[in-house]
Length: 336
Ligand code: HSE
Image 1 (cartoon, rainbow, N blue to C red):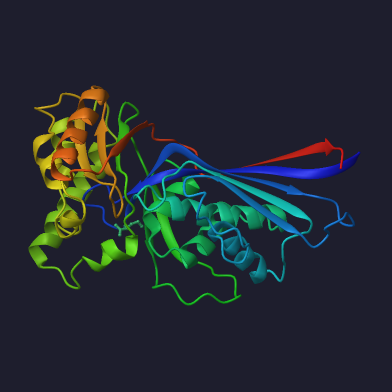
Image 2 (tube, protein in one colour):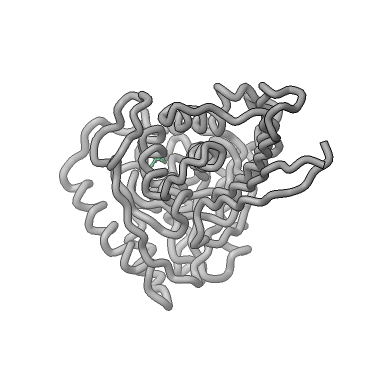
């Protein structure tokens, strides 16, 4: 019998932007990326080995080379900032139910998991605030990653544009705050079965904005963050404050059906609905609601199917979760 150390890291999926909060707001959802890590005592066979395995969305094409996989590549970068490497032998198993490239924060959650993995295997004792510096250094939009790390409903920004990665531990990269969330509001994710790269969805955006559109978003953003924290939620106020002129209008051709879903699924047509928006860079459409979830989802799916013939959608009803990334360390006896 040999003693091994084992940890389970969990990171929630997220939705970003939430209408007018482009690159600002993030929401942690009850769907979790899990990384199980086992560090074996040195001196065993395969002493130099890093065994990386993966199950879940995209398993067929997932890269399992530690230097290239997003979770382990991130961990190796953080470890290198402290002059460390993976302890070996080590086995890392990733379980990922978060759909890839759908606007539910799969890559942000992978980066957060990678930093948490480095923190555990390297005994780095980083606080979540310090972990955030590394995360923001890699993932330059704070919205998804702050929610994945901290949980709940959050707003964040970067102080400076990210610098190129080097082995100087980054510090003071950004700032964030937790916002209130009315507990009765849940998230319905209507997930089209195609991937949309964030880079492509960002290329659709203009380089400059007109003043009126910026003011439109700032006014709604302020009201939205306050309205989403109040119970019972004021559906009309939230619905109106979730309108956006900064990213959704420029991305609508990439997500056929989005404008019609936003215009026709309203608090008066669908009691229980409080707002609809594009989740992150899409293509997932996020409906926030307190009840009537099945009807809202079915009608959104119908519109999407009519506007995008041949593209299926999958629906997930998710809670907003208070806890972000967690690392539970266990020790187990195993016969090797
Ligand atoms: N806010 C980003 C975007 C996606 O909409 O392009 C998540 O970081």
